[in-house]
Length: 328
Ligand code: NAD
Ligand code: LMR
Image (cartoon, rainbow, N blue to C red; front, side, top):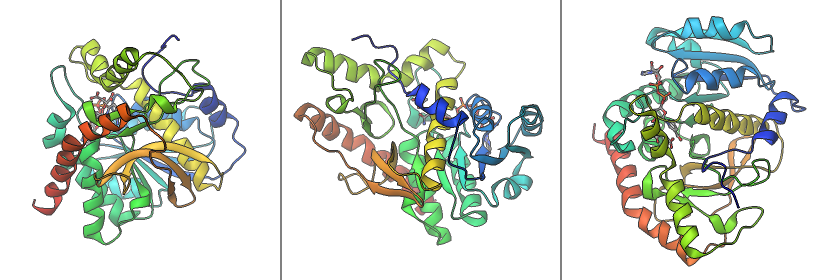
């Protein structure tokens, strides 16, 4: 088969869902980091989503301008811009879903973990605002390192006494495309290097090829983000494809919140599926966020070994995130 891209996307299904929705929800969605490389196109895509009646854009720069610009698009959602910490509460209050792409991206030669020092504080403060002002909101965290930022947000919610593991998601969804409209490949584990584990044996429709090719494809998927970082040569990491992925994940969540059944996405959540406390697997979404963890299912020994190989780094990343909040 021909690999069109190693990344996401069930495009047509998502686009038709966004533009011709039958499920109405009138949700408020907040984007924190709305002026960034991901934040801007993500906000544009969310402005097109008919399930959203209020799109609140928060950033420490430029958000009023981005909001003014988007508000000239003739779709339903009212757009408000919120600039700086004084306006964070207004951005977050009453939100159904808060999407967080705030923070610095990688440059060539960096790992996602190298972003920890800057992004941990940003995510901590944003999560704390959500825990106070909209504790029932679903949080979708895009900011890296996802393996640590999800545990950080979870510990912040625990401190505030508002923790619900079914409402905090790390957006780690990566699919493999064959025919872009047809193919889905679950990607489990975490969201960095060896912790990214594609379950190619569970691709739908099924695929079959020699072990050598399976290995090459697996490594390519694990390295997909780095390919973009290198191609951008210092100008950041994936933004447009991530915006699409984030908009798709948000749309799936809004459908599930509105009561649609059978909505499944992979995301990085609190999990008992493996010995890692947080782990990405296919999840059935529902009216209260995570409804049922669908788990790993039947996997090849090769894939089991990939998961074993992911464990040390994944556990280390999780511990680092928890310690950041618990030990200061
Ligand atoms: P960017 O630098 O273009 O944008 C980041 C935005 O965050 C900027 O507008 C900045 O002003 C804003 N920001 C910084 N501090 C903030 C704060 N305290 N509150 C609110 N906003 C704040 O970066 P980008 O390319 O959009 O990437 C954003 C993050 O997403 C990075 O950490 C990147 O590694 C991550 N990312 C994750 C995935 C994934 O698969 N989960 C994919 C791509 C990128
Ligand atoms: C990605 O997978 O594209 C993101 O995590 C950004 C990165 O740093 O690679």
